[in-house]
Length: 382
Image (cartoon, rainbow, N blue to C red):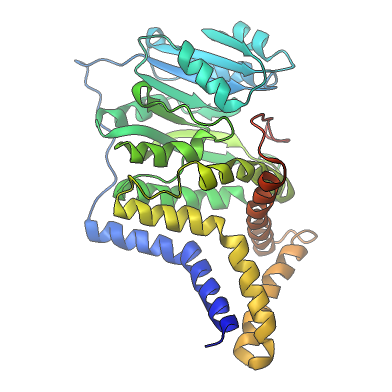
């Protein structure tokens, strides 16, 4: 077999495995193991509720912070056992004032240093009684029972990190297909959690044991850096679907491309120098998950380019290679057409192509000028 043929079929197999084969493999492993989703433990009145601190990092969140504080105060949790900290990360607007007026217990006014630095400062300032620290985005709305569902999972002493289920909504009926992708992602995480631990979380709703909190590089967000680091430290990182939140998504696919490109500029430092690539501390099945769900997915732009180049080189060698080239060009064509014709299949193709390109764009940005720790809310999500 020629080098071009090996590259074409090797890339194609890896792409199909990443998007289809890995989910099927996970489902098969879960079925073979016979493990059911862990039930949320029932409340034990004799133990009582632990003291919890809820941290909201905020930058330019004046439009939504009061509503977020009210949402936190409406949680099904004793008011005298819930501390609410709003960590204002160099907010140039009236976020601090509105947070105080809305009833936040502690409002930190910090220089602009990035979300992670703001979260670190909030954890350091948390009440000493807090054994658990929960985190949320300023534009996320938690269901009343969400905190109770998160906290219940910590009755398992092996658990150090719990992320909840976030549902992205697009009130303006925009073109973004993130909601469809996210339902697929949550399904994957539910199986990962059952088998071992999740490979990533989300910023909208999660919690950690205070004793396990990790101070990471300011450019490396908690969503990706926490789960694998907790596993390396002997803890489980789990997903609790009954801890539910909603968050407004970027309306357009083009906006989602820009958001994911920024996210990936923070992801690549974690992959390249943050310890993800080191297998030390990974149980075998979790190592498989990291390779399949993270590393191969982040390699998808390169795999697509290799497959396309190889198909072009082999197009003259028979109908099979013409079909391989045609399939790839059809995907690109559908993505381009999705920009002018809002048919669902075309929008899905456009979403896939642009979000895959965002992975490469984030790497280019990181290698070209580094990744700044600072952050700002994406347009259209507030």
